Length: 187
Picture 1 (cartoon, one colour):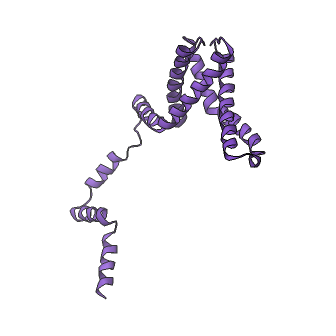
Picture 2 (picture 1 turned 90 degrees about the vertical axis):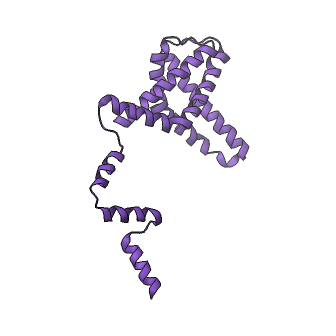
Picture 3 (picture 1 turned 120 degrees about the vertical axis):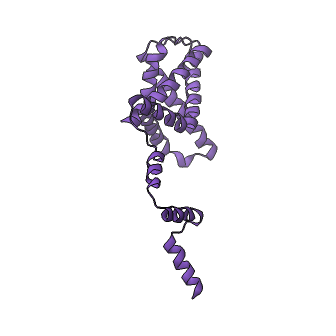
């Protein structure tokens, strides 16, 4: 559950930012509708986008053998743009975002959304990790840091065990493996 909440909220913040950029650089009027449109666009991105892309991918794969490599790349690019266009149109229909003009309102925003998706894909692991840490701090639940647990566990080791553990870190061998290798070298 935490994973989905963190993913949804981090993508929502990023999506609202993308919608505001669309509102600034296109004649699409986003304004305060960016919040609701962000929720819609985030939900579509997480759950509907993979379904639509999979459907288009299946349809395009039927004739993939008849295309050259460049032709296949063009088809894949068109498919990704069509998915972004469908997601944008559904977002406009379900929110109070108003669009003016065909090119500036329906062609340019999906391109901005595609750029946003590419940027988010590049940074999503770091963003979701940071958002997960914020989520853990807000809910008061301990994170998945094993460092604190392992620090208390190493404090209970005896001096000889910790010396053996330190030497094991250097060569990756346990004390018993090291002794067996020494015996092999003597015989």
